[in-house]
Length: 95
Image 1 (tube, rainbow, N blue to C red):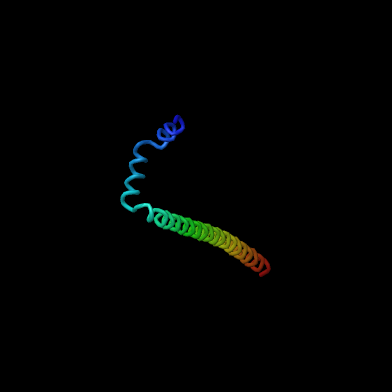
Image 2 (cartoon, rainbow, N blue to C red; image 1 turned 90 degrees about the vertical axis):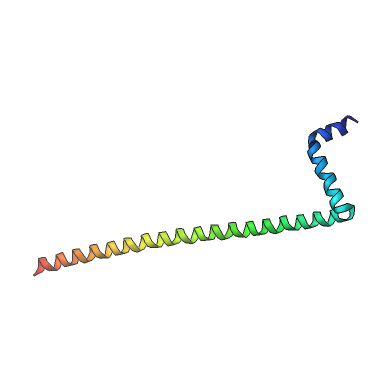
């Protein structure tokens, strides 16, 4: 009897009321079907969440790669500009 009272205290009277309301609304035969539907919905939600996380991570990786490429291109252009300045300086000295 004490375990029953502990169980009732743990879930609270509100949860018991909700359980009985569901039982009255859906009946004993519909509850397993309802639970399967809820489980399927949760599974689909988790699948969608996982694919969204994967797409976001992939997008972040692509953006980081673009930033690296842009930095490398900027460095290459700066080196080329420096080389051209040095080359034009050398050709002016030789003239």
